[in-house]
Amino acid sequence: MELKFTKMHGIGNDFVVFDTFTQSLTLSREQVRYIADRQFGIGCDQVLLLEPPKSAEADVCYRIFNADGGEVMQCGNGARCVAIYLKQKKLLTKDRIIAETGNGRLVLQIVDNDCVTVNMGVPEFEPANIPIKFDERVEQYTLKSGEGEFTFGAVSMGNPHAVIFVDDVDSMPVDVIGPAIQSSELFPEGVNVGFVEILNKEAFKLRVYERGSGETLACGSGACAAMVIACQQGYLEGTIDAELRGGHLNLCWAGEGEPVYMTGPAITVFEGKIEL
Picture 1: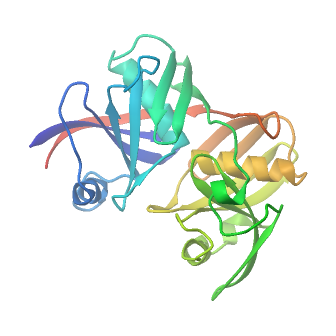
Picture 2: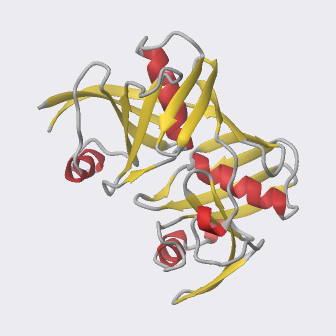
């Protein structure tokens, strides 16, 4: 079976995009792993599968598969790529797009040729809804592992995040601490682990060790999670610049109970065909 694909990225977080508007497709876990493999496949952090919407109010059904083959419910950088893909392929002509995900709907607004604002939804802080195995919501949780004791904030942005504040994010052993926290029984569905260095009241640097993919150059939902935790703890306020290894995102949040807005680029790299 030969399939057309498009390679895209959002500030270095890269994706292989397929759509079933023009071709029939069901991907197995093994096929996703093969596609994502950087030596033997195409290579990506996530595979995105775009399908016709299930409801009349939506424009597209948006599914996300991590490099390990597992399906997840949220990816902010991928959502921006979805909007640009649909517009470039002339599958849609409008600039405001409603995407169905496994966690609800996202509203995508194309603001110029390669820049998109995503309504990422309302952050969820209740432990059962993140999920994290704590009886009560607290501002900071503590976890002990073989790599030490860690204090972190926790939130769901449609997927679970643990946020750790550090003095120097560049020197952090992310590939050691990230897996140690991810393997904890506190997180029944796994967790994305963000390491945040506050630069000033309106900016921070971030690295994220993502579940199912490892450290990526950027994580959109991770940037949103880091921002809301930092705002709650008094580190940030106003419109925020998030500096990730692959580039910058603009973030805005009016406070608890309100949605997070994320703005950033989405770039098409190349198109091709793959035999599965």
